[in-house]
Image 1 (cartoon, one colour):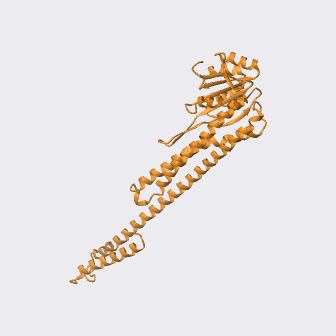
Image 2: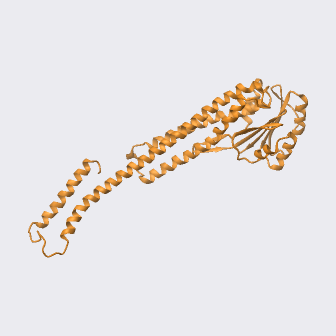
Image 3: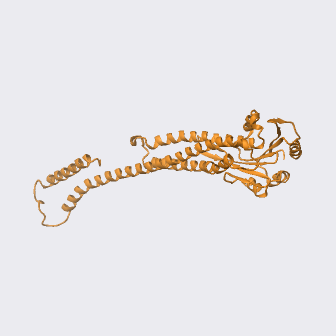
Length: 336
């Protein structure tokens, strides 16, 4: 299984120690010492590959099924022999305005931590290095690993929210730009609406990772959870506070997007009304000469003014005068 095992290490008294390369032997050694634990990291194992791990570590079949199917909501589940936590790391690509979520499953049990990662985002190498440099935290055993992973993921939520806020401000400036700078007309308005809708979908994807995690973090920071060290509660409370901050940012982004979309649709409605007023004004001015010409175009023998010498220029002057008068009225009312 070298392809799926990212790392396998034994930790004792806050330090990483040398141990067997085989995870079965390493787990037996960690349990035999009584004050050590094994951290086994896996990346996208198959069912056959993970069956070796699940049987050796005594993982619950339902948790194993969830770990293999990478379409889970963030959650915390307690089984007889282990604790199972699902986390969703988030990454953001500013060039394409795309939020991508991966999945990270953490099993905690008797002297072991097993992490199963799906996706290319949120590698745990940096978390390992940072945790190994903090012996005081690492002495809390497997709980320290769960805390360090949760803390890194939630802190990155705040970074992603800040990047989304910057891009949202640019989108807001585009929506509320002066109408004179918008030379694209209706097609530009449609493009802007599509951008807003796409941005809203990315925020929704972000919410699916952050909001459901509130309940597991609340339990870890307050309730008596098996396999979690009591001294770790203050650390999880800190993670929970950061998560609440991230969720507030996400909610703020969602509300602002809804307001921007409503304002944009209102702008589009006002522009359409302006266009309709202009069309109506020109149609009214064109109707006057059409009416007069239509009347005098009828083939009746006895019609007034037909034999007047000045009838033709008089009718032209009449039409021009009425059209000019309408033009002045429409211009004064802002229709033209």
